[in-house]
Length: 82
Image (cartoon, rainbow, N blue to C red; front, top):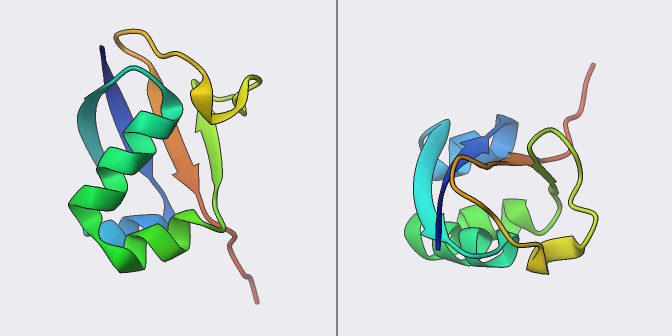
């Protein structure tokens, strides 16, 4: 298990009620499952439309990508402008 930082932006931040958190998880999918459980259905709905980046890059291996201590997982939902 790795100790990773989850960063939340825009609608994900609003749904979770915070801009970041830390989780112990082995993969990206595991971090996101723990966040869904922690923040509830509204956050899960936002996450369904969001892009997820690891250390500033989209995960190449998908959600099963392994994580190491200090990695940063960022959730970036679509943003509308006007």
